[in-house]
Structures are given as structure tokens and as C-alpha cells.
Length: 232
Image (cartoon, rainbow, N blue to C red; front, side):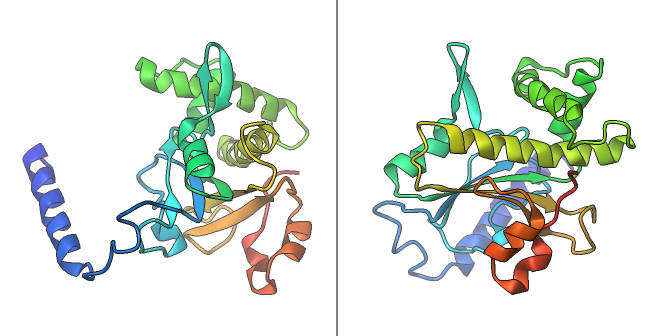
């Protein structure tokens, strides 16, 4: 599809969006925002950041995203919580943060390839984010949670979950994230890796708890099947 065709498709789609909106659609958020949750997703086009929760109202979800659903950035050589995560927490009253990875993640795959002797991807803007993931992947491969000898697809999906846990832990341990902010970790499965429900966001981390049977006791019984783990 040519660039002009893509542009026309965007303009047409936005026109339909405008026509479909109720007159009061933005009424409650025109003066400010108070999102219920900040959710850090991978910036993969296959991960629908708001639709996965069936949210269709503005102002409910603050959605920073990047390569590999990373909650940090680097400032003067130090890893700090990214401003896109901290802004709604400190300035918009948000008290829930989620990290959402996804099966078959290209960023985790690239970091795995670098960690196992492959080439660093470019350009620099991509390589930087992969570099930040490499230590996480190496730690995962050396842990007793990931089967480093399994087939590559399984190893990568285990590392996806390991990375979600690592990112959630970074938020929970940061002095910049208040103790009363709940932190949850999910893996969005559109490949049938965790089960046969495509599009299910599996809850793999509940405020630091990663055992599915314990997490299941903390959530309504009807969602017990939404908590599973690929890690040992």
C-alpha cells in the first residue's frame, strides 16, 4: 500500500471516528485527566492497548509504550522509571500500574539473540532499547526459571514473562513509585501459547506474587483461568 493510500485510509478512518462519537464523548475529560491505570505495553502493532480491556472511553488508560514494554530509561548512566509511567502517578492521581508483554515479542527475541552471541540490531534508536533488555535476558537464562535448553520459541516466551516480572519488580522497588500504587504484570497471548483463548491477557504478576495458584486466590473465581505461568 502506497503512502498516499495509507494517508487516505487514516483520514477516512478518523472521519468515521468523528461521526460515531457521542456528543458528550469528551465532556468529562476536556479539563483534565484522571486515568484509572497506566499500562506499559510493547509498541507492537499486534497489541491493542485499550481494546484488550474493552475500554472505549477517553481518559481511562494512560498508555506509554516502547520496544519490549520497558518501564525505565537511562539518565546519566542510571536506570530511572520512565516519565511516561510516573506522570499519571504523580500528576493525574493514577494508583494502578500494569506491565503488558506479549507472546513472540520481537524485542525480547532480539535481546536473546544478542545475549547468545548474535549481532546487535540497528539503528541506534532500536539498539538502545534492545541493549537495555540484554541484561534481563541474560539473568533469565542463568536463572532456574527459564529452560535455556528448550526450543527457541519456548525460551523466548519464557523470557517474555521473565521480563514482565522484572519490569514490575523495578516499579515496586523504585522510590519514585509510591507504596500504595498496585503493580500488575500481564502477558497478552495472541498465539495460543498459554491456552486456547487468543487475545487473553494472562495475569502473571500480582503485586510481586508470581505463583498462579496464589494469584488465583486473590481474584474472582471466574478469572482463575486467566492466571498461568510458563516459568518453573
